Amino acid sequence: MTLDLEKIESHRLSHPRLREMIREVLFFDRIDSTNRVALEMASDGMPGGLLILSDSQRKGKGRLDRHWFSPAGANLYFSLLLRPYLPTRDFPLFSMVASLALCDSIQEATGLSVEIKWPNDILIEEKKLAGILLESKTAGGETTPLVIGIGVNVNVGPDGFPPDLEQSATSLKAVLGHPVDRTDLLNVILESLAAQVSLLQEGKKDLLIQRIQKECTTLGKRVHVDTLRQEFEGVAEEIEDDGALVIRMGDGRRRRILIGDITHLREHAEHR
Image (cartoon, rainbow, N blue to C red; front, top):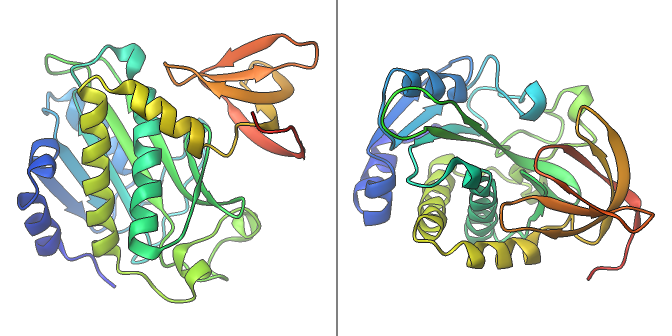
């Protein structure tokens, strides 16, 4: 199923929140990375409100410079360039905004319940369905640009993932047993994303924190944490107002992390 650009544009124009959040849509058959293009355009002074879509990516980006599997005609790959009127210290909260939007929209479009793994993975049965990559740089325009990159595994078949992803990734088609219309799903995601972005920009951060505390499957679990500089284990206890994950160590100390790689361990602690 190809993306219907006319339908996407019609949907955008018919929803006030979407018109406010997205002012221009660019579509590519194939580029290296939607995030890279968005950041490059931000450096050139592009204002916020740009949505970049691609049918495939040569060098799709995940967190920690990992490759994001991006075959043509199967999934969703898009980046949204914003220039939020918020302090940069609040930018990590947009990962929660995107996570909640993906949860709501996937359930609305498919009936499937998904889980959030801190900081930016969407899971079904502990397998990755979607990921979020936030990137920013101080260049061009009056406010600092923020790029929200999103990849959703939609119509890759159960046997369509490369060997290194077969055990860790899944798709909507693999779970449902039938393909999903990518255009309809994208429109629902964008509408939900606009609603969540509005909450944050209206100063209703407490509502987002309350929901993420409820939806994040990492909380209450024993986890392995890799911050690139060090590794440790502990129990994920809470998410603080700035999006930081609080880990309770074996000796009772609490450690905050804003950036890190989290692995859920088999040994689970009791949920709060």
